[in-house]
Length: 404
Image (cartoon, rainbow, N blue to C red):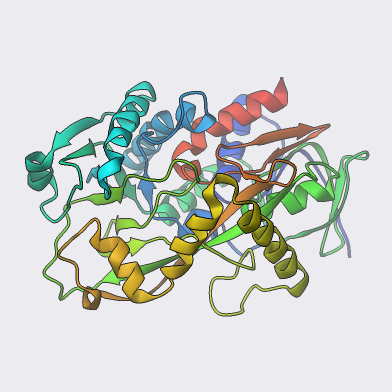
């Protein structure tokens, strides 16, 4: 039989952003009834569990952005949480290297941003780079070193947060999707036919945040364009050894960091991710997760972006699509790690989808986190990297804005 639920606070999405909002609410509103609704059977099934596990230091982000405001603080809070709960963390550090001679000035810009944003960074020369990361190369003789960049196991962090929340009385409804919403009555329906009444609702549904917002009749000018992040693993027989993480100087016109090295907490090394336009929000493999109507809409938006070339999208698309081919992917890695051979790369099942928000009015890919409040609903529309790193202070910001 259909049921009725009444909660002071309802959160749609059981990934790291939704979980962090629940933690913030439990802290700020003790005794309130809080529930998390997640369409999958467990938390972290998508972006929160498929990311690289890197706790970023806050190097890349303009000083007036939400990413800049919360990244360094979030890294410290999550590091403290891992230590408190004996969760694995490796402070392996990161180097950011220019791969073209004309990128030297970008090192200075990233250094200035990092210092302003509270990151510990230094500019190093070629000899210092060789001492820190012998296999890495710089096209200009300089690089940026971020010793505080760390790696964690994201799933273990998500699961521990869920355990903490359950002990605090937060309800979790797994395997539950929304089918209809009535924002005037502060209710929504689930696929089981249940009615949920809420005092205040938070939409933290990641790859589906725009669709949920549209159900509540808001944020219609925004849509998601999914980008598939594919990886290759480094063959264990390869002579290459990396001490930490190696990233290229990114194209700051687009919200992607480029193909880089990923060293898991267990020591395995991957290279990626690509940012290849995908035609489904959960199109991880083959045709899984494809819906014809949505695929057509995504294709249409991609075609417009390609034609108008906003943010240099055309050249970016050419570069990324070419990396679908292993030799071109290897060439991108070789710009960072010159000794890498194509045979060093082996296929990997590691893949993620970046839910990138597009403003259909300005035709720009949104670069920063975005929070949109409408009535008794709050929608987190662009919780992309470094959303995991920033999750705890960003959630406090979202909750404070909602309760104001």
